[in-house]
Amino acid sequence: MRARGDGGRRRAMGGFGSGVLEMLQDHGCHVPVLRLGIPDRFIEHGKREKLLELLGLDGPGIARSVREFVRGIPELRVGFWT
Image (cartoon, rainbow, N blue to C red; front, side, top):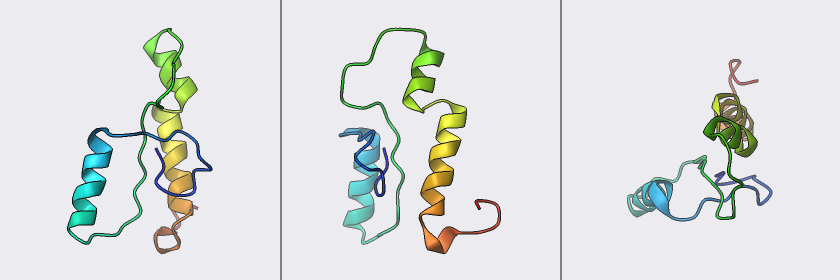
């Protein structure tokens, strides 16, 4: 899930990402973090590939999320991402 600028979409709760964020905070490391995960809601049954695509968690969806996230961080705006 996105840690900032997500418009309330796809929030992951708990899990590995939350543990990483807690550790970073505990050590005074304040960096933008993009968290991706399965939302805390009912997910239809189906083939794994299709479900990941619908959730934006397939390869192209993850790449799109990363590009959007990085574009929102002025310090990381370099030619590759724009």
